[in-house]
Amino acid sequence: MAVTSGALRPPDRDPHLANGRQLGRARVRRGTLAAAGVTFARNRLALAGAIVFAAIGLAAVFALRLAPYPYALQDLDHRLEPPSAAHLLGTDGFGRDVLSRIVVGARASLATGIVATGVALVVGTLVGIAGGYFLGTTDLWLTRLTELALGIPPLFLVLLIIALFGPSLRNTILVIGLVYWPPTARIIRGEALRLRQHQFIEAAQALGASAARALWRHVFPNLLPALIVQATLFMADAILIESGLSYLGVGIQPPLPSWGNMLVDGRRYVDSAWWIATFPGTAIFLTVLSINLVGDGLRDALDPYRR
Amino acid sequence: MLLGVSVLLFVLLHLAPGGPEAALLGGDISKEAAAAVRHSLGLDQPLPVQYVRWLGSAARGDFGRSYLQGAPVARVIDERLGATAELAGGALALAVVVAVPLGILSATRANSWLDRSATGVALAGVSFPSFWLGILLILLFASTLRWLPSSGMSSYGLEGNVADRLRHAILPVVTLAGTQLAAFLRFTRSSLLESLHQPFVSVARAKGLRERVVLLRHAFRNALLPLITLLGLSIRFLVGGAVLTETVFAWPGIGRLAVDAVTARDYPLLLGLNMLLALVVIGANVLTDVLYSIADPRIAWR
Image (cartoon, rainbow over the protein chains, first blue to last red):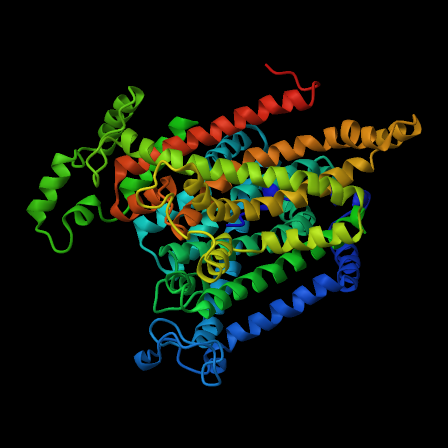
């Protein structure tokens, strides 16, 4: 599984150094993000990724209308049929239409990608920001917790929890989010540590802002660029993880289609039905690739050194 | 660290609804039968008591007996460990041997056709589900071309035959190496590019050193540290990848053992496996630190 979380990405330089003299929230946000938008739009690969991803997103939203057959409709007289006019991408071991299942399967993948990323980012940000801002004992314990969580191979932990609490779409999403927060926490902690040295934070404190206000109004907005990049890169990983879990049989459960659990049939009938092994995998690949392209584009756009 | 992991797992395992008795006895079982099983396994004791007992015997190297197989956990794991070590070791070696030189070439000829195609392939590689790569390899080399076997470690009756074992290892090792390779390549390239833009590289060139020396002794040596970090971290992901690869290729390693242990709620086996993995991760961290001090003499090895 291509699990290359944020921790494994190339080291990025501090995107805030160049903005060090800008004060306050509004200017940082508008200035950085608007310039980043222009850079991003000029990057053809990133733009192509965004378009492909948007198309997959639309397919997921309108899946039930787009799918030519009901996704669970079995037709045992037409098992393992190669692609034809009636079944554009062929049929699987139960005679179900592969195209329909791929289209509906987009929902599971995107739901996992989006929600699990949200959960991981919220937990990671809270842990990271608290440690990096308050320092002291809080930081010590939170760092220890992060390292403990990093000590167990993540896929193992996910397997364990899902097997114990039962496999389902909801559990898959929650567990992926709850297990993969440590890399985010690490990055955010580092950023928060750097930020609290800046004078505008000191100024806010001197003006009597509470810790919560300083964090929310001044630290958090400046973490946004790092967070956005981390979110896209993690979303790609989350989708890969979900497909792997579903392949192992502990993710999304049939008859609900997911690209991962469709590939179980792909492996089973690999000697006779190449189309089941090829198309769902292509769907995973295209989705993850498009997200990675967007992520790389965003990273280049948000990092002033790479412009 | 190991203690922390063990407490965390212990609590997690015992908080979960349903126990091993249902998996052991199957289907509908009477309350009395379930209670008897729980009693015989010592699961009716309070949690701290269970934990202290487990810890006491674990310290003496006794991790209990696997519920499913009846054999001691240490032996069950030991039987499977070799297969995974072979798979993961082969994959890691392959990934490093291919990715690092390619990454160096790619960084020195930035924006050449070689660099473009290498980065393109690497980006595709990190977007590839590794188990799908395995299935595609089987489709091509086992089903269509019939060159290589698609599952197991050896053919029946040929267990001692080295050539036969190698033939069985090719596809799984390539599968597991694939995504790691892509990540290493991307990383080598970007971290070398970064160090090539440092002032000391210009100084080295200005001194009139040959490009080879500048590249390997100055730039690459400084790009090595983040690479070592990545290598250390990759152990955790190799283990995860091994679970999937072993499933695709019916490879008898600890990854598949873990999946079986999870579905059967085999607590002692699960705890043993996770302790082993935590140990491997810690070992990898120590090794990373040692390699750091070798690569960079400024980092003293305490």
